[in-house]
Image (spheres, rainbow, N blue to C red):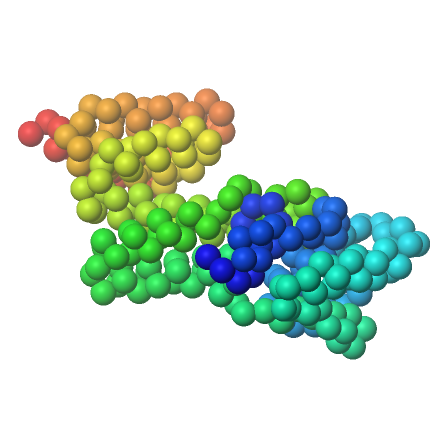
Length: 249
């Protein structure tokens, strides 16, 4: 609750003792995000310029970057107790990894996977819920360009994997209603992710609703055929065959 916290899982933020620190306009926040993503390693001026202005930087890019660094130093000097230092031809920002939400998210999800390996599904589920609560919106929200777009996609894949694991655990633990609600929203948002439909089918089946599970299979099968000219993959076909067999007993 106290101390400094850096947020990349949503709009870029710095919160110190519960108070938001003004990290400046989007590109300045992009510099901060880049330094935090490099976890204390040196980031060269060229790397910063490429991240902010790729593919074509203006002549003023280096001067503007140095201005952003100067402003960030002033913002962080006001009680935050972390410092952007010069390093070679660039800069570094060394912070406690636990104060950055990306690092905290990855640590918690790793702990959840270890708990699941030990057979403690309830602990794994609790940890994953805590990790997902760190997200405040799309990762690196408000930052444009290929570099940040690529990092955003990577982080969103991590989030999607954690959500998928949580729904799998919900089904194992008998939390069928929660799994169905989450998976229904997820399949609407990403209608071609077959694994989500497979989990939704199993959630319906375990909840004693095999007809709805089979109806979900028909929906994704039609979507794949009509929109992509594809047939359901082996996971979906296997789930359909097993649920269809059980429903006839």
